[in-house]
Image (cartoon, rainbow, N blue to C red; front, top):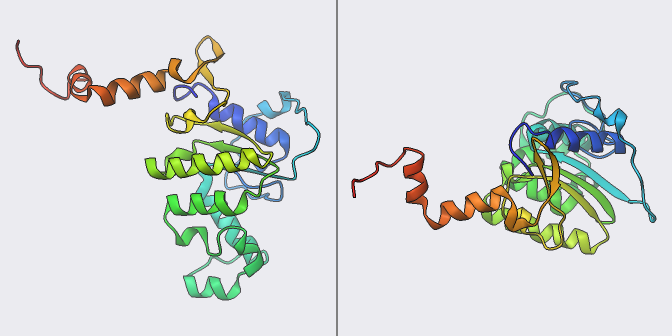
Length: 222
């Protein structure tokens, strides 16, 4: 975790690329590219794999989720290059077995949050490495808690997750190692000592006070 611009996503992307994932997301079998904009940091990273090796894996990033969902559609109809025009044509052309691993229907035909949860619940099979870049961007607080449950299921099924997040909800996961990106480096911190926890708690406890500090509410004379 850390402020915007501190390098969280850059490092996460570098780890994913060094491991063999597509820079814009997906599994190791995804090779689409809408814009070649990833950094060269992955060339300076050496991955150390444990035993047993991961049998599954996925790189999921909020900013390129649309492009990844389009690639899923393309792969579902055996590499078809033409765009899908409607639900009926897609369902008649798609490979049911392939599509089932993504929830049984096009990710584009669901809301952003629904498609995200569908992918995590169906495509993430366990015994794997899953790299998530700001997954909360698509999710309501309730869905973030649902993601916490799925994360726990994956951990119990011998998986490792590396997550960049601003979500105080996701950061509550027990025994997670939290690394805070700051100007003076990367520090490991307990949940209660993170800025995200402190600010969120302060705001929820006394929203009027902080709104006055921000100049949104007028201060009344004592």
